[in-house]
Length: 242
View 1 (tube, rainbow, N blue to C red):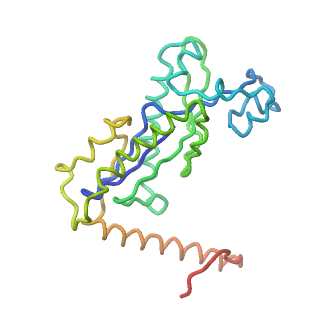
View 2: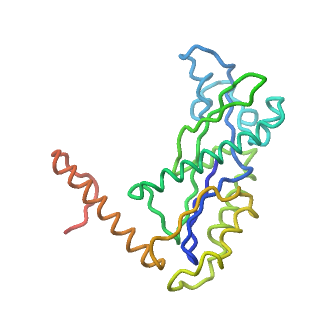
């Protein structure tokens, strides 16, 4: 699944949206087995499934919208989309409560790849949807050749929400009022869900937000340096002089 978190340079509000269509479903080519030693029956990761000599990318890489037909059950895809949206609304709220690890900037955006797993609950109940992880660097190659047009459409939708509306604008001073900004209405018209989460800016302008971010980054860097020094573990990588 693909989650867009984007900040508006006009009003400073940061919002999160889940794409409504172009989610990739990875399917195992091996029937489910209770034998945990059979990785191919339990792990649908592309890097695992390609080791199967009978791997078929077209049959094992689906869109979420194709799941109903693949399972022969109506309503599964809509149910999964709804549960993913509810889950990610909670995830974003929890992440925002720890600003040291989730730094927001109104002039930036990020596309996250979110992995979920479905739990079969039998024919009488829709599958449970469990969050596995959130990736800051989603591998878009997972779409494969058949779904490449959907990957391109996803990127076009991201750019139409997070970049194009602001591309020709000059940087302004203080943020405008949120009520008078059009940023909230951009995503639903470009293939994304309703807004799952929103956070207002903590300062009055984009430049002030950047300065606050730099301060938080400096605090985090000094904390990490202190940990290394107290443990006697050398810091690797390029270091900036005092």
